[in-house]
Image (cartoon, rainbow, N blue to C red; front, side, top):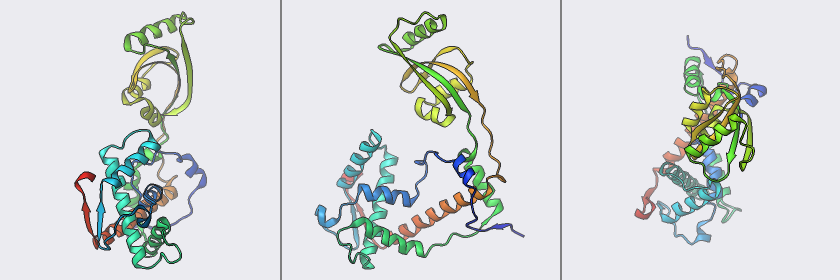
Length: 287
C-alpha cells in the first residue's frame, strides 16, 4: 500500500530558518517572474502606444531592450541568452494573463493598471489548481535531487590581503612569500576577513578553482590562489566540515518545498496552456 502524505502539513520554523537564504536563480517559479515582470514590463499598452490585436502577441525588440536594461541595472551586467529567454517567457506569461484578465473583465475599476489585471487573472488560474498528494518514495527522490538545498555546507574562515597595483601571479606569489616571512609591512595592502563562508558562497564569489584549492589548503599559511578575477593572497584560518541533511528530520520542510515547486509548475503549465489560444509572433530583431 502506498504511503501518501498530506499536501500541507505544518513545517518546522527552526528548520526553515536553517535552510533559508539560498540562491534562487536556479529555478523559474512563475510567481517570482510575475513579480519581476510587474516591475519590468508594467507599462500599459495605452501608455506605451502599442497596438494590440486580441489574438496576436508580438515579442519585439523593445521587449528585449527593456529586459536588458532592467536586468543590467539590477545585476550590473547584460543577461546571457538563457536569462534573456527566461525574461522573455516571463513577459509572455504576463501578457497572456493580461489578455485573459481583460477578456474576463477583471480590469473593471483598474483601467491602465496592468499588474493588477495580471494578478487578478492569476487568481482565477490559482483557484482551479490543486497539488496532488505525493508518495513517500517520490518525496525522497525529490529530496535527493535537491539535496544541495538541505545539506549543511562546508564553511571557511579566511583572510585576504589585497595588494594595491600589480595583481598578476608573479606579484601575488612574491607578496605571499613576504607575508609568510613577516616582511610585508611596507607594502600598500589592505586586509579583509571572512567568517563562516559557505562553500557555495566561496564558489560564487571567487570561482570553482579557488574553492577547490581553498578546500585542501593548510591553515595559518598565506597562499597565492587563482580566482575568476585574478590571483589572490589568502590565508585559511579554519574550516568546518559539511553535514548531510537527514530526510526524516526535514520531512515536513521538504514536503512544503515540494508542494510549492509543484504548484509553481502547475501554475506555469496552466498559463502556457492559455497561451495556445494566441498567435505568438517573435520579430527578428527580438531574437
